[in-house]
Image (cartoon, rainbow, N blue to C red):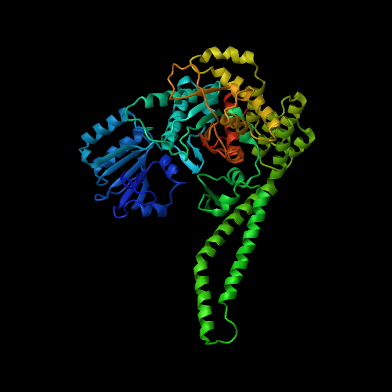
Length: 599
């Protein structure tokens, strides 16, 4: 794309001699942000880059690369820029397939503006997703959980959200270059997305020039992967519980976005260019703090060694051999300085992050929240006094809400007196109860209510069952899986069963779609286990789930390649805000202390 869509030899860069301007919208800027730095853009001949909505000066003799979503507003702006001759030529790259109507608008507008000669190329790039790690992506679609669970949402709103998710997943599959077999639990958003994605892939495979003519790029094997699609209601606790591993903590507590965290006004990049992050991001926090200290100690020893080798020894001596020896030491020291400087920057970065995390742990007693949640999820019961003590102690309002909701989900039978005591503790702390009451209501609504409201939404996949019945069964199923799995996440257990293609109760509740098999076939037959999986969570995912799945991939024999994707990556606080929004929409909890959703 940066080479004006001319192929670049693998590992090479674009023609630096062709200076160009890069124009992005905000979404496409987020796509590029974790992948490419400003220096890398310079290597590809990009001298300037702007967002499309910014007023720009005319640079008449330079080509422009546009990378934007295919929206009416973006097409209109492109026509305006081309009509004014802002750049010499326009190389247009849309993040997903541009609809015919918008393509016609582009053609008509460029004819009217007498600028068709400036539009050089138009490409569908199928890049409507953000790659955060080698095995992790996000569709960057905010508030999906609210949109799909809003009791007042109209069918068309839900259908638009589902269509948007299908479009993003289609882009991921096109990029991987291999058509997966799709598995999902029956009912709810997961089935809606799986069914529509299956139809979209079938339709595309019937086209003469489809995008899957070549072998896939997913890995060394040619075996097709399994795409496991889940809805956030399958396991709510994983989105709420406090975490104790480095990467999930940096995201949950320090607010990491697009692999960047700002601490003390200073931005830090956290990606695979940082060897410390790669080696330790999945480790428990206390272990990370130890490793930071060891790295600092080793760095100091190396600096002392350099100083010893290059330091003067008494009087000046002109002994030729010694002079040559000192010169050699000096050269070695000079050569090692860049590496030592980089190490110092890395150590400083992680010292600052670890110090910030430690400060939050102490001021909010985060270890207390983590321990009691872990205990509740492990045992399926609660020490009421210990829970009340945590809720009345240190911590933010969101910390307390998260733990209170984990209690509702982890403990299958919650006595009314116990729940009242917990609600009382939250009220005492002036905490809005809408999110707590929403989950409480979700858990208590019976099947009679679901059946009564199902008739209103019959053109969707049983709306009421999706909103209440499926959530309920999934909540209890999730808890049982957790109890029997040695504290393994329910999603991880489900993926393990699907990867192994086990026949039995663990996989009976799942639907299977194969877009390459004729629709008339009554059942999809899976032969043997899968070597690769793409796990997708509708309604918000997190780094805790990602790490759990990565560990599963490494633990299985032979090891499996597991990718993880989600509609958006959410911290526990952000997910509580979405639950709070839904509670407010249902008229639960009033306005007292309600946490405003982050937009």
